[in-house]
Length: 159
Image (cartoon, rainbow, N blue to C red; front, side):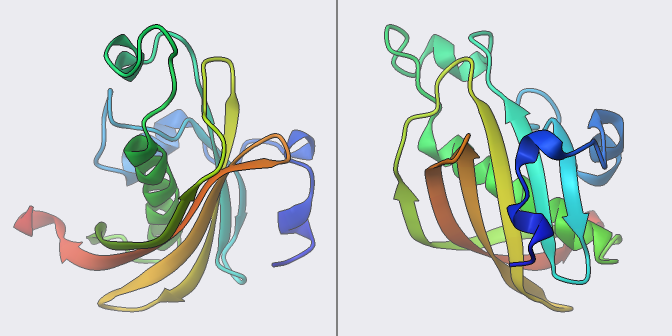
């Protein structure tokens, strides 16, 4: 990974805000899980998104309400959405990256209200039919989750 990709997140400015993300991703509340993009390097296939976790998140109402933690599947979805933004920015604008496979998934730390989650994604392969990204969700300097996510390109009209 490039040296800039390892730069502290607090030193970054917003590359894409919520309105730009809504123009790229088909997701909407409550399933739009990326608040902003704070780093994008198309040459090295690297992106960092960010999600601010509040107690008002819809999933905390039913997912361990007395001990609220973000569901692992939604952490993976947030990572996939961040990768989808990378794929779009690489020029695949007429298709949607649809999740095919998740491998090497590990959950290392719960994500709880008050956390700011940094969503790192690195494109291992991005081609015309699909690709694969390596991703990790971090809270501060601690890895909360990581996985490799494979996707296929699907025409928007097919969905």
